[in-house]
Length: 133
Image 1 (cartoon, rainbow, N blue to C red):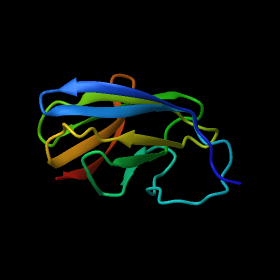
Image 2 (cartoon, one colour; image 1 turned 60 degrees about the vertical axis):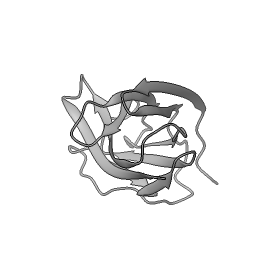
Image 3 (tube, rainbow, N blue to C red; image 1 turned 180 degrees about the vertical axis):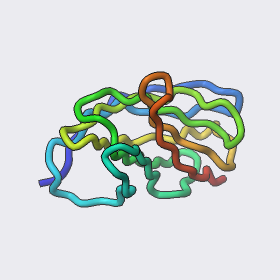
Image 4 (cartoon, rainbow, N blue to C red; image 1 turned 180 degrees about the horizontal axis):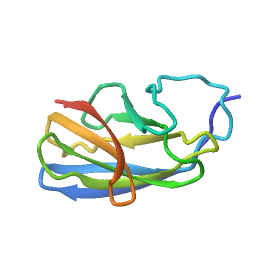
């Protein structure tokens, strides 16, 4: 069985353009396998796949190591600048989530950082990705 999640697109305008995010419910089963970062139960981790995507494309955020059944805020922004909220996800019983993120065509190409945060980002994980022309 494949993992399922509910997606509601959210667009956020920032200084460098617009990134569309997603609100995602956690997967309900573990049947599809996938590229997820390694993490311990006490240390959250985030993976972005693919690591580079074109404007108008999409990336998927895979989170692991968060507390079970909690809401995680998703942010993204250019490296070395403030990130904008792009959506949220709810972790499953194992503390994992999967959240697709659409990259709007207006976003400037370059290096970006995605963040998954809890408690005003006192608990967080990050991963870098690139937006291509």
